[in-house]
Amino acid sequence: MSTVMLNSTPISIGGRFPRAGETAHSFMLVDTQLQDVALSKFWGLRKLIAVVPSLDAAIGLTIARKLESVGYELENTVIMTVSVDTPYALSRIGDAEGFRKIQLMSTLRGRDFHKDYGVMITDIPLSGLMTTALFVLDTDDTVLYSELVSDLNSEPSYQSALEKLAPPLIHKAEISLPQDE
Image (cartoon, rainbow, N blue to C red):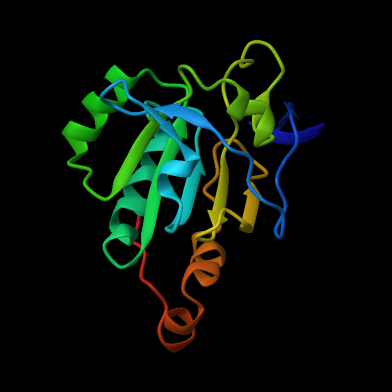
C-alpha cells in the first residue's frame, strides 16, 4: 500500500503500481461514446497515460490541457487521460475544451484498472477515486516510466515522461509546455 498527500493529510493508495521494465497490465476502459476500449487496441503505438481523480477537478483539467498541447508534437503516440468520470461528463468536458489529441477514458466498466495500476484511493471519503499518476508505455506495452504523484493536487513530471518517449528530440530541444494562466 502506498500513500499520497492531500492538503497535508496522508491518503492510502491500494493496488500494485507498475514499474519501469514491467509489462503493463491489460485493461478495459470506456470512451466518450460508451465504447469499450482495451489496451490492446493501441498495440504498436507508444502510450502516455495520465490518471486523474476527475476532469471536473482543477488538477485533472490542468493535466489534460497540458497533455493535449504536447500531443501535437508526438508521433506514433496515443495519449489517454483516465478518470472515474462518466463518459457523458468526459464528452462534455472534451467538447468544451476542444480536445483532439487526447483520448478521455472512464473506468465505468473497468474498475480493475484502479488495482492493476496501483492508483486506487482506499480512504473514505475519497475511496472509489484514483490518485494522480503518469505512465509511459512503449509499442509493446512495456512500462518505460511510471510516476505516482506524491500529492493528489500536484502535476506529474511531464518532462521526465517525455524524455522516455522521445529521447533524441528532448536532448536537442526541450518540448515546451504551456504555462499556467
